[in-house]
Length: 444
Image (cartoon, rainbow, N blue to C red; front, side, top):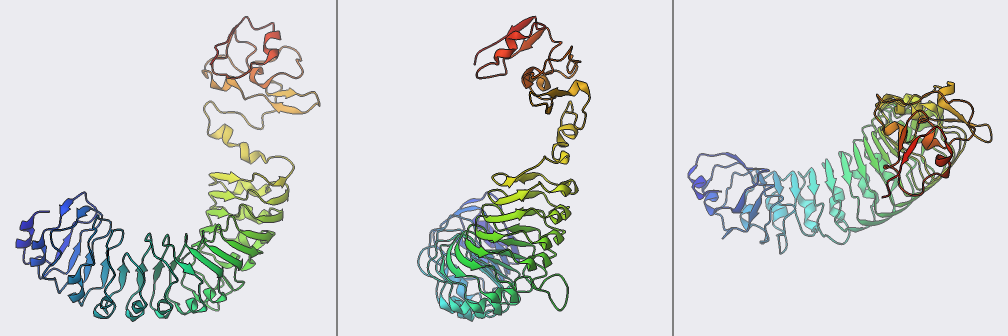
């Protein structure tokens, strides 16, 4: 960054955000006394020779996030009385944050810093966004924060904070995003979180919370029949110690796109009401003690892309309406007690997404085998599927061979069977097929 930039004395807006600039910030920048917007974040700047800038008193936006500074808090910021946006996060600032920051900068709306959270932060009545995430903080959240009723976003994830979430969290009725995941918080989630009616993101996973999900979370709203937290789009409470059942009221959160309650201690059934979450695309209820049958209403989640119900105690058949979930990318039902047949819709991709296609629902004599217990098996698998599609494959079986090894079931007309792609012990039955003229085996 050249020092000559300080000659642009009429400059009011300067953004070099998200480049690959390095070196030091020249002190001549402080000559830009009319500057109102300065953002040098997401670069590789290192400590300047001096941060004793003369100050830019008209600044309303100042960003230095994601650089490599190791100096103390820049004192010139304290005279920027009109500052509404301050982001010094993800640096290695040393020392403490001056208490005067919270009195001099009374217009501050966005604050993202490193270091501890002082009690004086409650003086910033205009503050609507606090982001202290990804810092090594300690101790509880100061009680004064919960009195900031204009908050839109509270981001405190990956900070090592501890303590409990008090009842006063319900006072922050403007809150749209609450993210305190991956900390050491404990205790129960207070019932007052149901007062946060503007929430669209709620993430508290990987803490030490216990108890039950508040029953009022998602209760009917007098304004819209879509749940009291009607705007919630992301609910994550994974890897805590939440117990009890899944509240049926969660089915009233009509805007919900992500519901992640994995690895808790929840019990009981999946509420039928969850089938009403028409915008849900990610549902994780894995690693719990849930049981009963998987409700058929899950098949109503037509936007679903990821469904994980693994490591539970579900019984009965796999949901029969799975064909409605046409956007499904990942389905994990492992380690349950399910029984019955696999719905044919789950193997339809073998035909639609493979070339050459593996035919499903084709039970002609050319495509089935008869086991010793007279059970039918498809024979369109094995090494034959890896051969050139123009070669001779899936021909008619001459006679009844009974229980034929799957890897050889489709290759009777080949003069040479290539087993180079196979590893391990080769099937003894392969050497008893007199119609095969030559077998090439290459050990690996």
